[in-house]
Image (cartoon, rainbow, N blue to C red; front, side, top):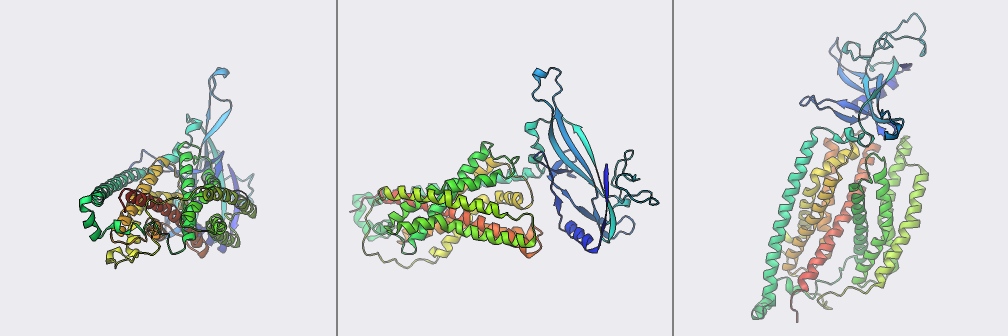
Length: 548
């Protein structure tokens, strides 16, 4: 046991009170293990679970007055679990020495007492409430109130316990989580089955209708009748017409989306193989940054291929925009947030040395790779559509109200958002509530369902649009599936208002700034899925019909 007496004035006790009201937790690390506290669920008292960190204090009603007060945890029992191999034969031991396999804290609130006739000395004073002969206990009649300026004696003791937990399983207590996680598994499975069912139904309806259409258009007996009817075949000379609005921006967005998609797939693959375990702190973020940098070649290649399909000529500008547009936007937001953290004196601010390293990776690795990919993309022969494009655009008839671009774009993001909404809650909890996220297998499954849902929904919207003789599908395909990101940002607002208790301008800016970066990234990723699925769909159906 060790002890230290501290005097706190009114301002300092007010800080403790605010920290307790906002449920601040202390986070320590021993041998790369985060500190934890044991929590017992009233419904399952025999199945305790572990939460990361320990609280600064708590609120409760005073034992004597019944008034709600703030109490400080001023005594900590540090419990370190270890494992040893006691095999008498040294040759058969799996390891030598001692391995730490557990780290938890039991906090106590105690108004310490001692012989006040003698001056307090942290080395000599013997506390009546905590000494070698009497361990600390939580007594409601003796809690340490922190509502008023006071002197507080801080103490701690250390307990070592030998357990049979192996080194490879020392993270199991963190990953086991709350017993309520069973709801997580059920909800994910239920959501997955519903989305798969909807996807299969949409695919069956779409394929059946298309087979009928193609058979009708290719039947010589009905060819003349088809010419008199409306339908998607009538716009075959315009369907591959390049978009009239910002074709360069379009190709840049698709290229960046491919880069983000490749990064996400590679990161999930490494996580499934166990290379990105939560035991390795910061490994996931580092992997995402490095993978994004090294996937720059894919961005340059696909951006140049699409820009060449649009008969674009300013290839240098297109390549520069691909290399700098999205990273510049993210860097600007990140820099503003970091300046706010520095202004607040937060230890979470990123040092300028790290910023410099990121700039070097951006300019020294990612940008050259974008140019390399762009070179090979422009060098390759341009894609030849299965049908020719007329010089004069075909007039587009008046569209029904339900085919208005705003409605189709908004509707296109609903199903993809439904595919990720349940998993999104747990990802948000891991990001903002200091939870450990580890079920990458389910995340991989959800991502596959997300891609399938984006593709099916966007193809369906594209088919309806072409049946109404509107061939302007390029931007619609991008925005329909990408609108899922808008729902995610709206969800983040709801999560902020209902699940979080964040006070102050800078913390709120930090939350919404990072959620904006995540939403933009998600938009580009899902938008690229929508484009490629629609492009494949249009190429297949117009390559399957006979055109004079």
